[in-house]
Image (cartoon, rainbow, N blue to C red; front, side, top):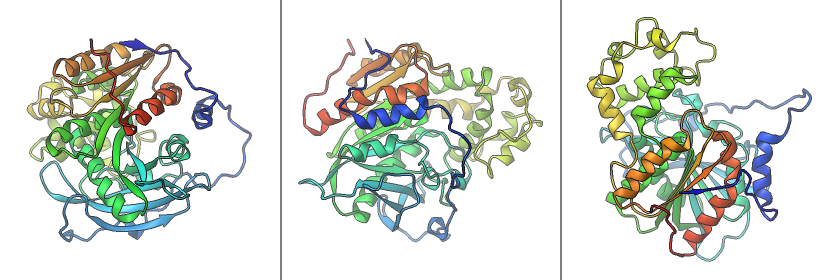
Length: 393
């Protein structure tokens, strides 16, 4: 497994410098700022029942100019059909970013972005945030010649049932965003790769695993940045650390996949009001503070549905098609590189083609920007048709 230096951006990658500046620029003096979020408009509303459509079929689209993006990037919101974990037709929202220029022959190559966890309320959709919940990173890709198709996942933005923290459902939403984007935005190419960070990294691996079944010949591989680990291990660590309050969202995700799951078998009476609160909020910062011991029933992780949810959200239990670039941060308290290495070893053992990079002394936020050079090098090679490297040995 190859270890990377803490800073790898080259001088030629000006976009990379912009990404790094996100975490390195000190706070400026107070001044007036526009709201960080955008209103939840009628564009996101869908009738019940939803008019029938095949997964990936576009429902509607609209241009948007409210994002914090350079003038050289055009943005279009999309609403499209996807499929839930229970096989139901659901409406999903997202946004497409393209360079405001003449597309190359064959159209703009596509990066299908899988976003990190943002909450579970409709207003938590990344397409309702001015920075698209990714700072300058998503603007960087169009700046170097790629289109970005960023799904919100079902239930964020739209009034569809939300499959929170579910790798398999979120991966299908990413996959089906590609044909919908092609129907909405002229000039897109057909070839694409998936990429994501933190929870989105697991979703990107989920895309690779789903494509083993779907076999889209235009899919070229996936980039997973700081988030690939066994679900049971990840949430066990979070229940003992600073991220323990996300466990309440985990209960919501399990309930969405397994309706017969009884939340009270996982959450205590004290924490159940938080479970109701998250349907209207994107975080729990303003909610009452409880310890993990106060929130969770003893032996909660042994519940049948919890275990089944963990199994379907553990990468590397199914073969992945296409190459993968897995990037990990040594100093990430939730998912350090040694934890990611366990999953990568399992993926390699089943024949997946993985290039695994670790970055010493970086946490999850820092590695997102510091890995841009490696991201772009790997992505360019895939679209160029070069053989994909692997360091599985």
